[in-house]
Image 1 (spheres, one colour):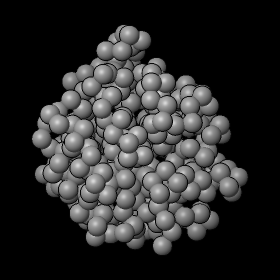
Image 2: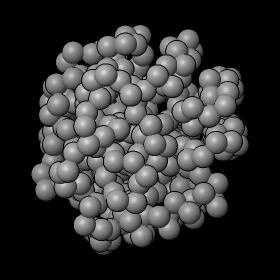
Image 3: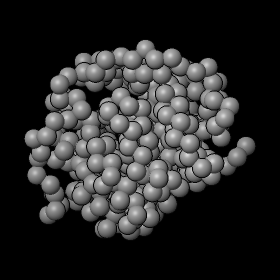
Length: 309
């Protein structure tokens, strides 16, 4: 553990009281024509058996999944509704899974040029750095890790080799290192292994690293927004944080403070509400045109090197 690691917190988490309900809100047929081009930078793609296990977990501990679609249908669903590009995320929860998952996502991306795939690896598994290098050599554009599921803290020494590989290849790491949503079903106290303090330790120790924290850093929204002002390598994505589902309000601190490094993501298909709910919220914020373009697509294109077709 890092010497500045926080102690476990007894505060209430988003899922401490059990699973949340399905929401049958109306969905749009397509991306609203008033919006600039949209890149969904947080879409999950897994082989069917992994998806089925994941949805069972969500049903029991998180929320009912409204769109239980296999990966090819996920891609078709979003692209047919006017999303311009998708960034595919996945993660390995046990040793030996990552190589197969990386090949699976790389294969999907090879067949669909509008799909940008990321790699994964389990921190601490044998040969982890080589697994990540192999993923990047497959053409995967970054790496996704999940502190809650994979049971690690971002500032643990075992992470150093993975950060070094990201810097070597100049690829971003998307790391679920916000404290929420915490659940008793996880094998770790997410408030203990995650949070803004641990992320700052990483940014301080690896200044050349590009790090993207999903969910606007839930639940430390203001703290992560402030951290962006101190570290140019920090990015955030909006996934589920602006939907008014997990929180009563809509935390917009980061969008107002640093829209050039905040990117839209949906968490599709693992949603309990309409696929375009957050797009509607973002549209309603009435951001200046240049900031709206950056949040909905421009930032993700810059982060992942997406070239206009």
